[in-house]
Image (cartoon, rainbow, N blue to C red):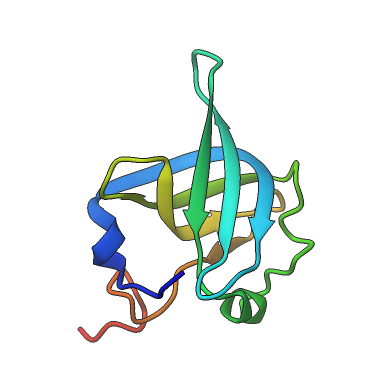
Length: 118
């Protein structure tokens, strides 16, 4: 999978926020992916894919392979894909213990990117 700028795939105007259950965590380069089942009010379940930074970046921020085991309840704040599919670029992830971690990669152009020049 090729590396890309945020705005090539995701829309900064399509903010998404949801709670869900981790089903799988892919520690792959250039971006890790978190698979999350999100239960809707009508009882149906949506299977979301959340793009995160590189595995190395996530490790430096305190996330490990054991942080997001299947069954872990998480809160995701991010931006939906431009094509409207159930994919998001994750900005922040809140763990069950209340810890919030920045998921994004710096220098991608995502809103609030600490690597972007002001």
